[in-house]
Length: 421
Image 1: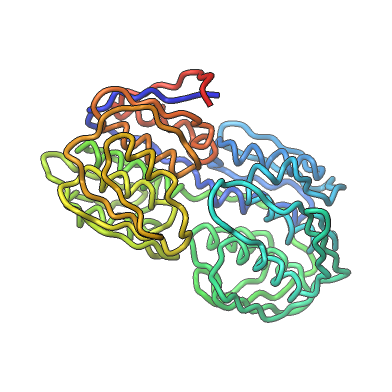
Image 2: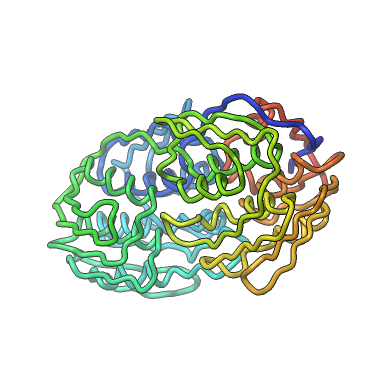
């Protein structure tokens, strides 16, 4: 098990390329199951979650070749329809194989998911969508057991906009008989790209990028290739790394359109943001950051996956701000660890009240989940002295060698082996 050792106080500068999107990759990979053949996913990030999904697809019978961020998936020999607990427990996105297996093969047995250490994230919306499409669903011995001779087009109304359930429903409906209408569909960029991938595979989908998606089922799909969109959460994390150190950096191969809510809040803080095609620059030099409150919401609002990082930034500004998470009420396990570094944060239900501290001081802190880990690294970049961030395997789930990117921008950060748990 590794840890990061950070010497704080270095202002970041320079430029770095943003990796492909984790969340997009985890939807595109199981979508390849829908067709028999070889799919090619370019700009795929080298992350533990991607490796976990690869192992699951291999278990199902797919052939995987992953080299230089090009992922090739041959789904022509899939002969297993069970996603076992040993694979699914590591990552909630594994439930994405449910719709494709059910649509193409008429059966699927998927372990109830594990993954993050926080919050109830039920799969009931996925299951209700599959039932609406005509599948028989049973929960048995910790598994979702689904069967359908042929899925039938239907109308699906989501009470809550869900990225995962929208993705699963779209994939399943692509091979269903007849028309499907999905209301209150998620419009996150990752869902938009999944829809575009399905269209390239031969699916008939209207309303891409809107809350109402119409799908006319087809008899079969064909394999294809696509370039994965940039990771908007990595983009936001690196921008906050520059802001928190009063730095000046440029991110390339990214998209400002996918992260406008965060960019606007950074401008409210006093940072200068420059938007160019496939490029974002931030200049936070020689400014005193303003306290800015945020409330998370579904896209295009402020993403819940940036909440912890924003909390870290607000912990060093001059003034009081609030950080409210309306998506996951208990996603605040980073708060006690940030307070160990000298932050002054008080929790009130799903709101963190942050009083900016004059300075943070290095200490040992422990990662609890992916985005919480990122917030601790950000705080360590500005803290006086040495910060040790333990259990950085959480970070490796969603950031491709984040320490190397930060180091290239001037941070004093290194990865070392650790026996501490």
